[in-house]
Image (cartoon, rainbow, N blue to C red):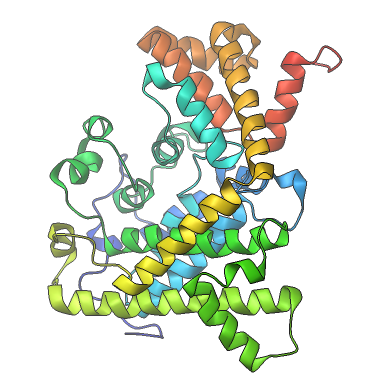
Length: 387
């Protein structure tokens, strides 16, 4: 285990052995290939929009709740700690984490579910695939190629899940799903860092919003353990300081377990290179069985008491109404789209028929922030609003 700037482990992803980019480019002079990926992601339009996209609570409900942007930064921070400790590629894991939600719709998972229902007859909608579509096709920055032209390894890490039918359309990027192979260790870290971040930070936001309480959370082993430590060490601390102490210790606890369990997994598997990692029978980055069970208990609790709370479900209902009505109207009458998107829809329809037009409409809606979606809905349906 490493805590400093140690050389990369032999099974870490290394940009000098990258599978490259879709469109060849000269190597960067003063940074690595994965640094270039990270920088392109940070400068992208989709990344900036994340600041106004829902994590759990709609942005305008409160300035202190997390957004997709702050969530992505928190995921990257957790993942970098893990990668450094395991002597893996910290820059690659950061790039993956910062890009993993670029394709998310407005209104969080509620928006994704609504758009997926609208796209049911046209290939569906899944935010991992949309994130890949954003970096491969939709971002418009460079004269020589569409998208951001990221390395294979960053693109692979963005695509956490994929059906076999979709995998068959993705060429080399989809092969690991077809052959049941593993991604890089850096991609595996990004996946679990995402879970750590949203479990612990959604808990924090749930307390802040008054949906759940500290006393109620004591029934969960993962929370109760750190609550007792904090209560013993700081008996006079309560409120926000107490919650922050508990949450940061919960994160530290599960991150330490993940690192230590993964070290044991790597020793047992003894991979000599990235190819050995890809050929492993299962993921090598993992929690211990006990912590995995505690983490799942917390996840289920949040599902039942936060994500299904009536206040959150009301937002879900609004999201479905806004996105479904926008999609139905724009699909039936693409001339109502902004001029640029009318042209895109026409071009895509000429290539792929109704499915192409539907995908163009989905791209437009998925790229919206929460606030823009609400305003666009008013422009289209409220007679009192200026178009």
